[in-house]
Image (cartoon, rainbow, N blue to C red; front, top):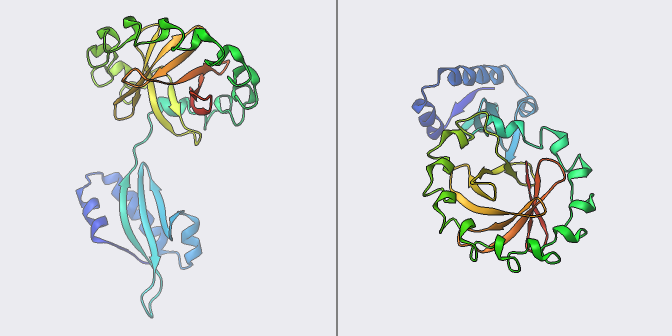
Length: 262
């Protein structure tokens, strides 16, 4: 089955100086050139959307479709070439997708729906609506609007815009893309995709960053080995509670389980 390319695909390929990628692409084209059956081409690919297929070469995705001109045999049309950022090695090492002990779908001990001790709807000690000590509206010590020591807008030492040591754009040691031994926590959604990472500002405050290094929110430690979470305007938005091991589960203000922290 012959392979042809759109102008967009050819343009992107010509801009790349990666000879290894080019060689792998040629091997792919040679492979499909020896295949006559459309189904056999689909077998070595992944279905994407509306009969568009993908083929992986390292961290690149080759998008193609299978089409036919009147009276001709089917052929592959290479549509696009997209580089997908690889999650940092450290993220993969701590990703629940690859480690069953960290995966709440496989390990009931760290799943709030299976373990009542780590479910704030079942355990009043970790429910801010039942335990005033972990409720910022009742406990001024964990409320950044009442306690300047834990307010990044008032305390430069815990503000990434004022303290380079806790800013991953300025300090490679806390940048998981630069430091393969970064030992901070990562935030995952329920598809076990990494969303954010966490930097310790001090013993009481943590800062959240996305992988573009935007500071998104922060947390203040409470006395049940968890954190009250705030947006950058000091609004209380949720809480982290220990999963009874080395990670946390994130809940919103109505105790709905939102994310996984490992």
